[in-house]
Length: 109
Image 1 (cartoon, rainbow, N blue to C red):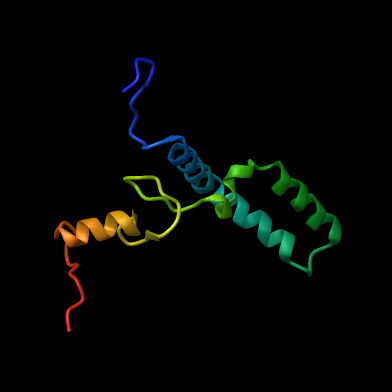
Image 2 (tube, helix red, strand yellow):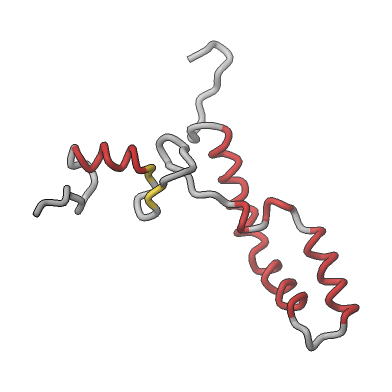
């Protein structure tokens, strides 16, 4: 490690950013759900829907669930992540080959 480097729990800054987004999404989930229900309800008056639009816009941008991206917990790789194990396909294959993933074995026929 470099002299100015600080070791943290997360692999890199991208993973830390994703964790922050997950926390915000969890924190604002109820509020966002209620406001979106008002926004998408066509029976309500337009003025109320416009107010709900402004309220959604006022929420933090990172509280939107679509900004969350699954990452490998070991390498922080964003693509090819096995959801059940939260590992990228490369790390998963390595662990599976060395029998370090419980209940997984190579296909044999």
